[in-house]
Length: 385
Image (tube, rainbow, N blue to C red; front, side):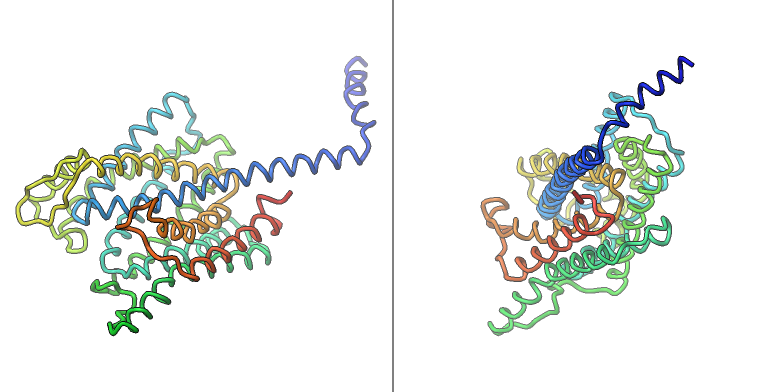
């Protein structure tokens, strides 16, 4: 009897709340959620833009000879930082270790295949593949493995995002090549003077498939963990697996696409990469095209590590909270935005500054329209208020 009276007392105030009050409270909650979601995606886009810009400048300054060193060194930094964060927070794993290992293998494998294909894949093709494949691949894999069918509105919005990304990727092809021909030069089809190999393009495209599968698998693992898996923990496991995976792949630097080193040169080049990170130019091994290094390399390295690590870890948080599809659609906005950043000499320096074309503006309009359509207008949108 006493329990019945207490239950009635708890229910009584709810019975006196009219429908209008409930509706107003629901609308207010939805608006707060939409505002919070807008902030989450704005930070993701800003981190992604910074990651792309810093990465392009960093790998250019270190040169192709230190590309594998950079992959190994950045992974080592992430291992140390993420392990410290997990131990400090005492974050639980709450997911089978084998699933987290699979994520690390997918991430490391995608990076490896992309690195092999990159030297002989034209820059315009790289931009086109990475920009236009991620969204449809993630949507398709989410439907196939997670049973998440996108609504018509979401599919149409995703098509706008892909169109905008393609427009941004073709910017130099549409304008710079035309100017070259008008000046009496010969159009190389956007190859940028490199030797194009079909297998390199295929491997670069395959890497995008692996990255898309990784994002969908990460969403699946978060769902299996019933919200108990911390994004920092997943990041930590991924980086440790990636670091261990890179060690046996060091001999791959004997491939022409990855430097064409001889076995005795591999470890000295890794050592010289460390010296370059500290601002010192190496003189050995002899006969190699070693870049000049100074404290700018040091600043760029640690700035990139901070931004890239935060971008990857924060992307995991977005996948956990909103799903892989929402994450890649938001991330696609970064492609035309980073192009705008590269058109600002005071941000990237005159060496890396480019011209602003009408295609850049058109691309930005298209991807923003697609982003708003997907997240604001579609039934599965994260910003519906």
